[in-house]
Amino acid sequence: MMLNHLNHTPATDEPHGGDLKRARALVGEGDWEDLSTGISPWPWPVPEVPMAIWQRLPERGGALSEAAANYYGVGAERVLALPGSQFGIARLPCYVPPGRVAVPAPGYAEHARAWRAAGHTVVTYHHWAGLDALVEAGSVDHLVLINPNNPTAEYLPLEALRRWLTQLPSQSVVLVDEAFADLTPECSVVPLLDKHSSLWVLRSVGKFFGLAGLRLGFLLGPAHHPVRRSLESELMPWGVSHLAQWVGAGALSDTPWQQGQRERLGRASRELEALWRDYLARRLPEVTVANGGLFVTLRGPGSVLHGLHEHLANQRLWLRLGADAEQGAAWLRCGLPPDGGARLAEALAVAKQ
Image 1 (tube, rainbow, N blue to C red):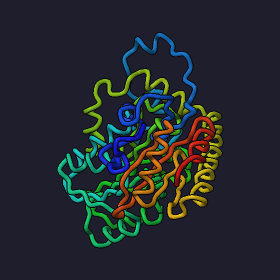
Image 2: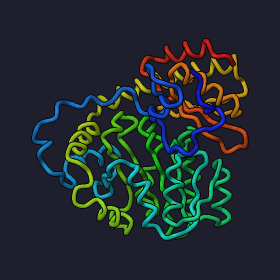
Image 3: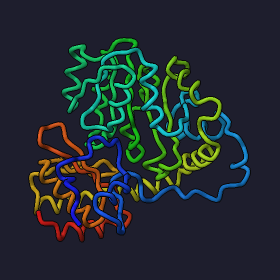
Image 4: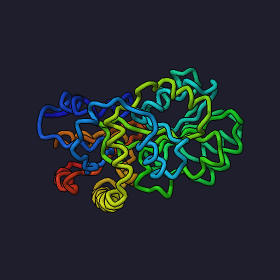
């Protein structure tokens, strides 16, 4: 069964992957493998939950704040637990002075949506040099950065960030979304928090820990900032469930598992990249590939990637398709397969391209 003209309508209006309901509506039922989200297929093994965890109301601070502070390498006073980093994405712009905010394109679409809804003027940038020019010219008041960027897999140049933080107005907010940073902690901007009061970082346990359904994230930033206090007031009295606090504290404290997870994900990521590079070199040399750790992203002509997306969907493999910044171009994001890529390799072997 063929897709209903999906190759003419990339999913630019959808902020994220994981919508198998849409895949089934377009193609039909079947044994679907969802590669559209970038969530680790190997989650932290949640132990049996004691009955008391279900019965107690949540408390602020405690084991979760301590575990998060140790894991991220910041003081506990800088940690604000959220019911998913999406909460911070949606609500933080509401408490920032109105202005012009630079947002990456392509990038996670909910950022631009949230800042516009809060009354800000969104200015898009397509590469770091473009953002550098905007800051140099004084054309923006606030920045949104995604490190590594989803979907392009580009890492933030830390030296450039240090420069931007000194060039922006004193009331600026620089928000760095690091939902995919756990695999490469050496690239995180968290160490800069102590030196810059305008810097805020969003982290999540959904991707690296494979616990997206838990809805737990963190905002790291100044402890007594008005933005922080406003978000805290929205979360009172029970913004993060006791279950999420208990599971999150366990996952963030499990150093041996984290080390093993980085090795496992790193190996799977390299294997997936190699699979795609081999296929593209033989069949689609005009398409590039970038490795984001928990996903691999192809970028190239829209007609080519739309066709590839359609073919894989007909093989019941669901990838994330979107429009690129360049006219006529697109991107196709592929998460880590749970089977080592055997099913994806088989589907690519019979592709028409």
